Image 1 (cartoon, one colour):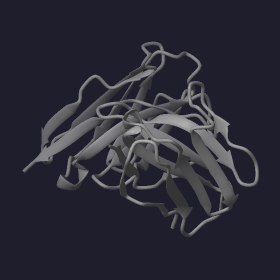
Image 2 (cartoon, chains in turn green, brown; image 1 turned 180 degrees about the vertical axis):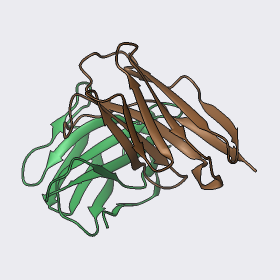
Image 3 (cartoon, chains in turn blue, cyan; image 1 turned 120 degrees about the horizontal axis):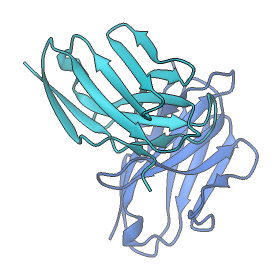
Image 4 (cartoon, helix red, strand yellow; image 1 turned 135 degrees about the vertical axis):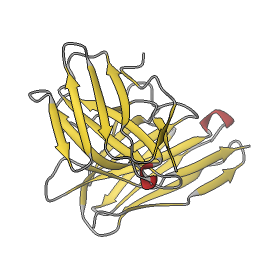
Length: 116
Length: 113
């Protein structure tokens, strides 16, 4: 158990458009989901923490109006990159923590975003 | 400012031998350390962790050593197997269950036949 999926796995969009990435916990309920970004040859950087039914908490330097996070249910969180620019091209990866306790974060396979 | 450093981008080890992956950290507030393994096109999966009250934690072929005074930890894999070829991320947080995990850049391990 503890499978996290992301959709899409790859997306290419034009500059100025918005793109939505979904993160789902397939076989468990997640009270908390996390969104990370990884630039080439860099480490995973936490962007924001989202709790079901409440507003996301963003890390310093992450624009909340640009990266909209919605955690509407215990199995789904979405990240919308609004007015995307080429510098937003990156690997976005989510993780989820079980509702029933435990400290481990289970990661999704990631989404490669390319903005042209 | 890289708080968790993995200075070796890649490492090649003969099958059956010991693989040693190193990690250094700078933030003395870190008290909980984790290793994740990542295969291509998959998300990182948790491998092993250690709390700062210990200096060693072992799980099967995997052992993590922590030297808190040196702010250094290492992951030992013995014996190395072909399926161990992956990217290994060292990570740290302030305590177990703390939301923010700081990751290193990863080390790509190649197990040679």
